Length: 211
Image 1 (tube, rainbow, N blue to C red):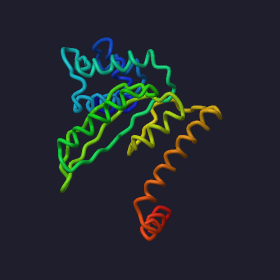
Image 2 (image 1 turned 45 degrees about the vertical axis):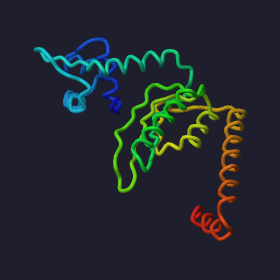
Image 3 (image 1 turned 120 degrees about the vertical axis):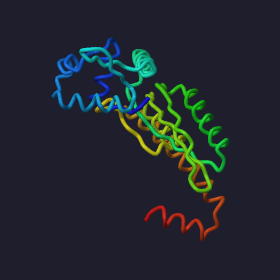
């Protein structure tokens, strides 16, 4: 589903129940009319809403309606406090291999019991020189700090957006558990790198790492 800004999210929620005129939306959202029309034009361009009748009413397209409804239903039973949107990039020398890797990552993410997946959008493969690239746009929540560290270190997202909450507290136990996971992963990486580089290569690697 396309990425909405805050006003567009509010518009989508209002249109979830019924089609509305611009004036009805303005009254409920309490934003300037010109600003509202800009948001509606943007959503029309993204092809997530359509308009019909006179006076003109705006409504969510069916596929967007279904996606919003699905997210709303998941949110109603989701006990995780931290909601994120992340981008996971993938590269491969063959397009078939790229698609296989993307599929495997999606399957693994959905099996994680510490994540609640709202949706995963797979971008079309893009040929770049001698390799192909794509990415997964993942909307999910994570159970705790340990789960957050697992997401960051094992899946390596290139971008992370915090959807909610504005503030979040972790207990000292949760923090310690997550830090132990980081320490274990970093230690494993260090051992692997050290076993595959000679002393000169290792020194050069460390120099670049800390520059």
